[in-house]
Length: 73
Image (tube, rainbow, N blue to C red; front, top):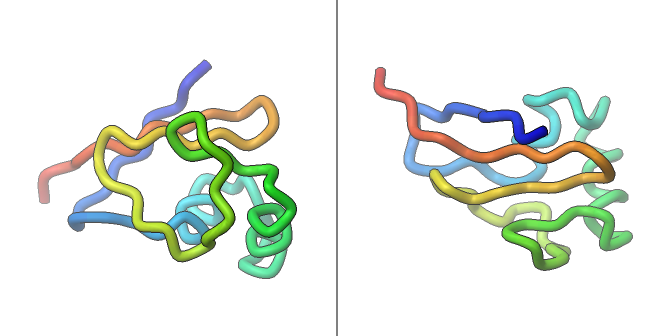
């Protein structure tokens, strides 16, 4: 199941998204999971925790998948 995540800015950083959706408990945990290659963005392994995610990007961690959506103010 894909869970939508709305943003009101132009982008959100990968580690911030993982924290916002409660996929991780802290930024340190996000950093470790990303560095271990356990996070995919648009089906590709992503190793940059500061990767900018834009509406339409998909993030997958284990059996959780999120899609970034634009939300108006």
